Image (cartoon, rainbow, N blue to C red):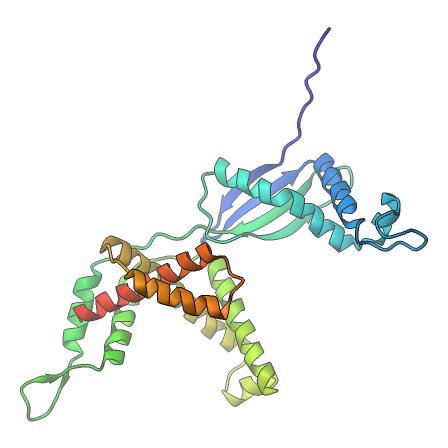
Length: 291
């Protein structure tokens, strides 16, 4: 008796690193896996799909499939495949991705392997340079001399903090991936549109009132996003290098406020995020004391 080996078709992936810091992951999915995922999707959706002449959940699957919009079937089917495919690609290519990829369909022909491209990135390396010397030097040079007095007037806390941030951003070297900037810009635009909607203002009217246009607004947001991301990464690295600690009571207090505002958020995710934010604040406080 001879044994027959069944070839298990798998998703394959290749990566390409772009000059802008983005990483492309191109997945090739055997059509047999697409068919399997589509069948699973139809079976899942059959429970809630209404088909004339049949009780809910009792219609033949081919009839159910006819009622499912093509885009819905596509999205749900790929949802069966891509998470595991991404996990395998991350392990295979030894990636430490910073955000979940933005996927786009490259090729989807019946009977042929499908190709999906995911755009993501890794967190960039931060070269802090001699940030302590830079901050101390600029702070000393920026103190205000009061006429008629030998002593220099100390900068206000807010002025000192802004000076520290400006100096740090000018000192560090970092290449922020394009996709991180785009995600941050999209979030800022979404927030602006939500605020304008509450005020009953149109975006065009707002831009005219502040002397901007869509291109200049986007460019401004891109600069702000790049600086914001660079600052967060630099402060996180400084907190790590200086082994800065956060008081547990401060974390608990922040957790209480966050829980009240968003009770459905995962507690562990919330704690990690708030601890990271508090460490960055502690790092900024540390730098301000150097000035």
